Length: 102
Image (cartoon, rainbow, N blue to C red; front, side, top):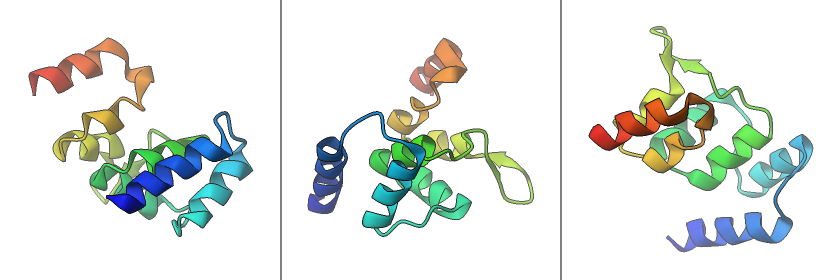
């Protein structure tokens, strides 16, 4: 819990509107590798700070995972992390409606 708070404060202190490299540096400071696997794990765990940094760093929001090509967004929904799914605002109101109805 405290680590999450500290990570969130770090992001706020360093600032919004980061460059791609700045977001990657922040991930490194949090000991998070800039890899697709680490991104999937952040989505599954509901780590808003990391997901935001991954997307700012240029990670493909439409990334699929596994041999079945499961969209990473599905992990956010399946693990009950609607706050992560909101990072996918390009999906618009339809996604938010699906999240509310379960």
